[in-house]
Length: 367
Image (cartoon, rainbow, N blue to C red; front, side, top):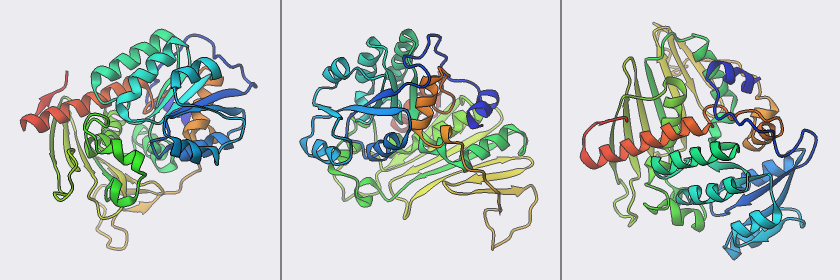
């Protein structure tokens, strides 16, 4: 099982000492905060499909989004334009937060006061100061705090981590992450999502926040905290009037390795892969496949990424964020890496260092 494996191999996330608010076998009451992050629609599907989870309420101030949500959820779901009122009246066991990044801390603060478990879409926050405060509040309140990344739920990622920690590559010496797409506008995100994705305050940046967060997550997951960060960003779509970067490159320095992160809203197609190198060879994971190349393997134009490896489907409890979050709450298990609060504080510290490096054109030592 992936959860057990990563608890042993990767290390545990936040441990919460108090019993879960919902005992095993009872319905967990979930609520949604925010509908202006397009990932919410997939999460609503996961909630509906999860046995033992009941969606009780949604809070969002946008009438157009509320009207759409009402067509996709049971009639019993209550709607609020004030999330604090929702927390007090609907009394959920857990919330799933799908809002602009700069709102994450304020929502967590209210949930912590009410001892409500909290899951948020990556990145954890817009600044490391906010991220550290979120982790501290969650620890003090003994609530689960989870940061959701899509790559945590797919078999290629899970198998890659297993193989790396089993020593298939030897010591990891290089991690290369390529993440992104043609751009939020170009792929047709909703106007509500785009409104804050292109806002330097609400999003915390552009592609650097949207997609370098995946690279920082992979680096922390596989190698831990880097010593230095050097980063460069550029706006390639010069005809657009937005104020954020749309192409960012980060170089993370370790004592024994390098991580290269290429995050962009300018890829000509969807891009989401990680390649990991060691003295014994390399592994490359996409969303759907995992490839292996041993050291000194001859070039094969027909198989440029190496040999595809067989993959087992992810167990249900690690196949999507709702199943995992519910399992962690119901059985009072810790949130594991790469979803844990502690690791994601490190992710945001890497992104903070990257933005400072972009500002100064100098490498930044990690604190």
